[in-house]
Image (cartoon, rainbow, N blue to C red):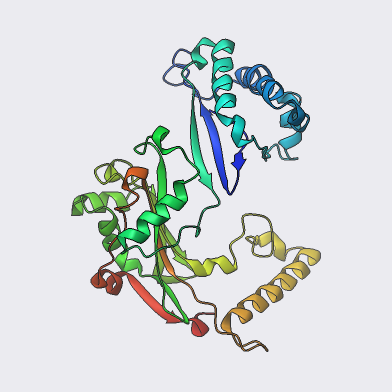
Length: 334
């Protein structure tokens, strides 16, 4: 698998990955990864030449070779942090066809390569009433209006459908005891034995909220258990984590025991705790500006083929809410 930069145009960003099958390159116990030598050929003799051919003015933004790209994107611990380069919409069709053509010339076994695309940055962009057919259709149209749907195989394109449950001035979250009921709602074809097997698999992970054993979310890859309902992935969590959720190294990064062993690190830890406390105090709404407390919603996300986008999570029975959701006054929570 060879990652190529994001294709970005208009308001949509699509992350694209080129997949290549190497049927004769490795045995049963060998790694299926593309060899570094082939990765170099893909970039040096396929990708970059096509960039130079179709957008020569932008070629100066692309690393001159695969080795220089690695040197640019690798940090001091040899971890890769790839950048993002845009390809204009008006040449995308020609560019992609030429790229695949060049791949086939470089290696015969690259001729079956194909693109996999993923929308990025769309969470919350298509908020709608899930129980209203018209609103669901409008939301789906907004999501896909930049795509040529005549060329999209909706069975092999996947979308995340989410349902949020909230109560004003409360933190709504998931009961640990309701996980199986929630899974049964998302996987109606799965029997009790299948649910037990799914929750006992390593692919199912419970995400506890602080140290409250009765409250937790979860995430799981359904595998064969989701095949009949066409569900690939399920995730349940609470949006109050937004206040401390960081993908980068920052204030809320996990702290280590070593931080207690050296005076400079200990002083930094104390400062961070004070700053975190201020954030939590702001969330209570008791600050000088007398704001309302920060709410939190219980959110469930299900990944399904695009063909199921209009028929997934379109109901939410009251008995399911009573069994699975608890609402705690936001001020008390924080």
